Length: 168
Image 1 (cartoon, rainbow, N blue to C red):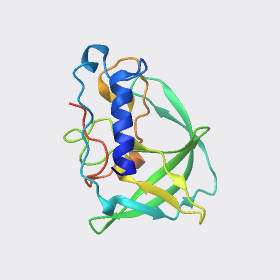
Image 2: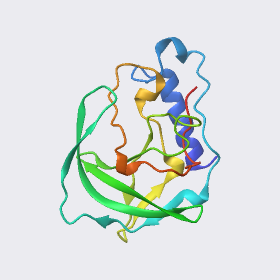
Image 3: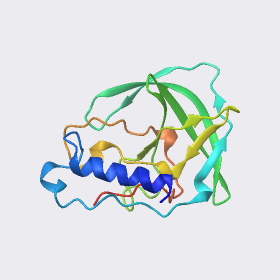
């Protein structure tokens, strides 16, 4: 079993058993695990981060009508099926944050988008592995979660066929 499979198995165990799971209590006993796209090496990148000259704080609306504070940190560019795509990377006290909506959202994936939390490697490249893309907790039917909605600048017209799929 690889590291990615082990991470997914751990997440399924958490979602089925933990009191803080976003899976509604009445569904946990029958929960069989999350669904994922097959691993896609073409959607795993070490990218240059084009940092913004002026990092500005922005308030990103959430699904619950609140706002979450983030800093617009920089921009990444990467190819999907030979076409260059651009996303904005945000930063908070918890680290880097990459919310996005792509053409799988609403069909194969949660309509409200997915998230990534990329890292920076020792060479200064930002590591973006869409195989790690995950749904926010509000995607599982619980009304107790407030999840940032990916801003317009992070909406892609292409399909990102990697990472977590729609729960149901």
